Length: 301
Image (tube, rainbow, N blue to C red; front, top):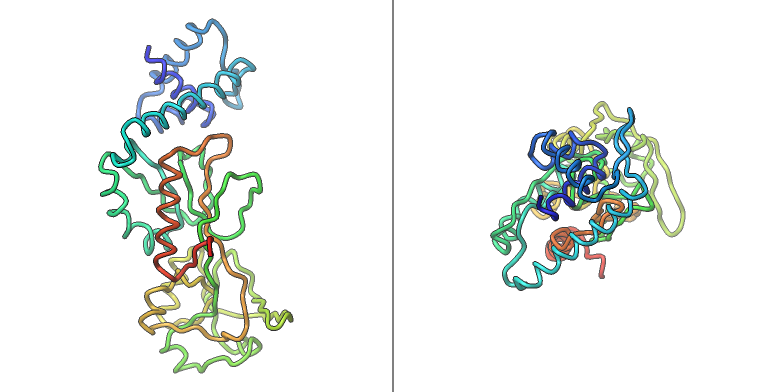
């Protein structure tokens, strides 16, 4: 039995809470995972997992083994990376998640550069606007926008983007440009499902809120972007969502004398797991992208 393989398998079982989920992530059959854990328990002469109708949880001995094994594998990964040298690049598989529109516009077009720097690395990209369970999905690092729902999450802020009211030049030519937030009530808004139907602005310390209406509400940023570009209304969006169109003049910011809260970009790592060298290096790569692009501002500024 390969000790490191056995430790890695056991760690995956604990992280996912089941043999079947661990098997799916490892691309092996469930019996193979069960056998490896059984052999590990036999070798250590102790029970590592408690099996119940609610799933698998580590025993006291299993928890101690899990923590030490996780640290040992992390150290082994770091040692291998150091031995090969920074110029040799990363290897293996990196699994990332990101919102669909953000990844399509800003991450996937730059992945060739990252992969060229690390020719032995494969990258899996999960595109989902929802907050997913990083451990259950086997994600190494997730790129998330906005406030983090879990204050205990292991996260690193990468960048910050301004948010504005945005509309196409064609829409503004047909419907007119609002001069004050109150005039938004006379316009069509393209609403994003998590957002409320009132928008709040700040000017010279005073807060102004206005109720907006719209005939279309979408559940994903990709739909909001498509609706705005189809001249269906105006929306609140981060600069990154319309970066190219803002540069070309196809869309324009309005009500620029009023401020909206900025939005942060975070690299989020799974709770209870040390961030891998691959995940940390990818997060640094994304921060560099954001600093270079200018539609987002680096968190270091």
